[in-house]
Every structure is written in C-alpha cells, then in structure tokens.
Image 1 (cartoon, rainbow, N blue to C red):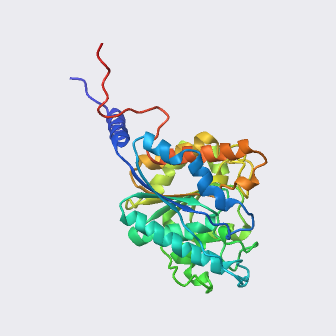
Image 2: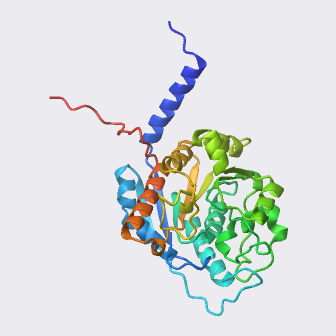
Image 3: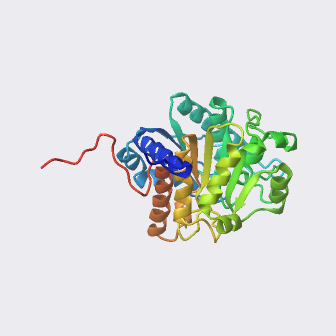
Length: 341
C-alpha cells in the first residue's frame, strides 16, 4: 500500500474542506447604511443602492446563498451639529452608529452573516460594536488605504470616518474624550486582535498609535514584498494564535487601486489589485469564521463617468461574493451528476 506523506494528507484535507465549504449554504443578512456625515464629500450615501443595483442579491442567491435584505436604515437629520473640539458632526455620527449597531445586532441574532453596505467608514463604529454585542470575542481585519485610527484629539481633519477604530479599542479608552451621542459606545476589541491590510496613506499620529499599540499591519510595501498569499497566512496565524475568534472584515473600497475603484472619496494610487482584493475575501471565507462584513466608501458622485460607477460597484460585488464561497476555480452542487444519454 502506498503511504501518504504529511503534505499530501494536508492537501487532501484542504480539498475536502473546500468541497464541504462550497456545499455550505450561507445565510446572509444585508443592511444598507446610506450615511455621509462622517466626512465632507456628498454622494457616499448612495453607495448601498449602487452596490445592490450591480446585482448583489441575485448573484449571492445564484451561488447558493440564502439572502435576506433588510433594506436601508433611515437616519434622521441632526441640526446644529457643531464640532466638539476637532471632531465634526459628532451628534449625527453617534446617532447613526447607534442605529447601525442595533441593526447589526438584530441580523446576527437572526442567525445571518451580516453585510453592512455603507456609507462612509465612520459606520464601522456601529457595525463592529453591534457585532461584538453578539460575539464578544472578535478579531477585526481592516482592509483600507487608511488606518482610520486617529483619536478625536489627534485627527488632522476632524472627519470621523478617519477615527472609527479609536473608539472601539480597549487600550485607547482613556484617550477618548466625551462626545455627544457617543456615551453608548464601549470598547469591544483588543489591539492584538486587529490586522490592517493595504495601508499606504497613514497620518504621523496614526503611525505612532499603531506602533504604540503593537497592532499587526501589512502596508502595500509588505503586500509587494510578501505576496498576498503570505500576507493572508500571516494574518490568520496572528488572529488565531490562541483562539479562533469570529472575524469582522471591514473593507474600504479605496483599499483597491483607483484604476479598479475610481468612485470613492479618498483614492490613493498604488493599491490592491483585483486579484489581491478577491484573494483576501476568498481566504477569509475559507476559515469558516467570517461573521460580519462592512463594504464602505463607494461614492458614485466622485466618478467622472457612468463606467467608473459600474466598475467600482461590480468590483464591490465580486469582493462580497468571495466572502460567501465563490472561488475562481469554479464549484458545483453536491448532488450534481453527468447526464446520461
């Protein structure tokens, strides 16, 4: 009898895992968060509808997912929302994120993997907070050109879409001043459970915070040097070093190169390729622990022509399909058989 070497055994196990994964029926709950007040560029509130219009629900269903679309949240207008120190529009951002947190918590309690369609990235405050309310031990994979970890006291712009992580990290709790409509937020993530991928536009203050907290980061320099496969292996080794926690993926579309996702508010050249972006979602799906996803910062008003909107939305849909079992090698139903003549 021919002996199977250890690497052959590992490959066979991986093939079996992938087969079972492809046969798994994913249950997806989608919530749209048409919110733009975390930054200053109009249009990002149309992101959820643009992504849906690119066929998100139908394509998820076509690949075997059960999908419940909870529709769009309705955010009330907040008047006299003056800055508190540096942070702009804190009242609107705090109120909107409470709605997002409640919606995400409901979707998780209903038994779905949650997809939050933004809107700007300030909404990750509510999305991660709501997720953590149901899954207290979380790991966060933040895919973005920007670190979004400024505190209200370090932010150079005052835009809260550049600050969301700082409100959520236990180790930064004593660095966060009191803001109106933010009293409900409690830190829910530890620095050791966060990984950044795709960084290439980081403020000096953010760079200090990342080093101070010892957060694992993969800038585009590391992506270029290691390759995306090694980046994802190291990401999973890091977040699963002691215990396998549910993963919250927060994906800003500007993590991708602007040639792929031009319809966004803060594009930065030299970003992830299509293949790298999709590989990230495929790899995280294959862990079996992907529990919630944010897909944010699609802004059709930043496009110069309709083709750019369609391209950005199409790529956003492909990223989400990768989160729920689509693999580029193809797949088939467990009960499929070749027809007999």
